[in-house]
Image 1 (cartoon, helix red, strand yellow):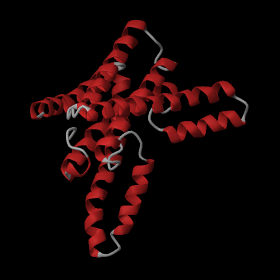
Image 2 (image 1 turned 90 degrees about the vertical axis):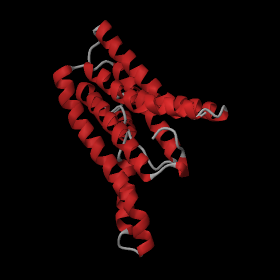
Image 3 (image 1 turned 180 degrees about the vertical axis):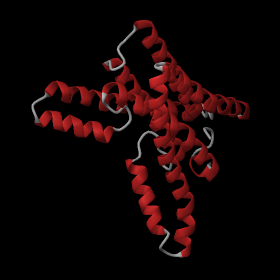
Image 4 (image 1 turned 45 degrees about the vertical axis):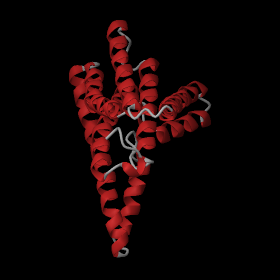
Length: 232
C-alpha cells in the first residue's frame, strides 16, 4: 500500500490506500470546519473564501485564508521533498515514513492542544491541520502517480464522472473504467463517512480524535515501513 509506486501498484492496494487515508482526511477536515468554520483540506473553498473576503475589503480574513493555502502547499512541498530525497537514496520505506511523520505531528498537535488549553478554533489548530493534509495529499499523489488523492473530492468527483461516461463507450474503455470507478467512488464515500464520523467523535471525545486518527495512520504505515526496510 505504501511501498509500491506507480505501475507497480495493483487496484487492491490503491483501494486500501484510498479507504484508510480518505477516511482520516475526511475526519480531520470535518473537525476544522466544525471548530473554526474553515476547511483544512479543501483549498478550492479556501481560495474562494480568500477572494470573497478581499472583494469586501476584509483583508484580515483574506490573509487568514491565504495562510491556510500557503500552509497546505508547504506541507505538500515538505512531503514531496522528503520523498525525492528518500527515492534518491533508494529508500523504499520513504512513503510510509512520511505518513508516520504525519501521525507523529498529529500526536504533537493533540498534546499541544491538551497542554495549552488552546481554543478549539485557534489559528494554530487549523494551520497545523492544513499542513498535515498537504503532506498526506502529496504523498498519496506521488506514490500512486495521481490515481489516489485523499484530502479532497473535487478532482476525484470529476474523474468519477469521466470514467462513468466511459461505461457507454467501447468494451475496452469500459474495462479500463471499472476499476477507476471503484477507486474514485470509494474515495468519495470514505471521505464523506470520515467527515461524519469525525464530527460525531469530536463532539464526544474532543481532541482525542487527533490521537485516534494518528493511531489509524500508524497502523497503516508502520507495517509497510517495516516490510520495505526488510526488502531493502
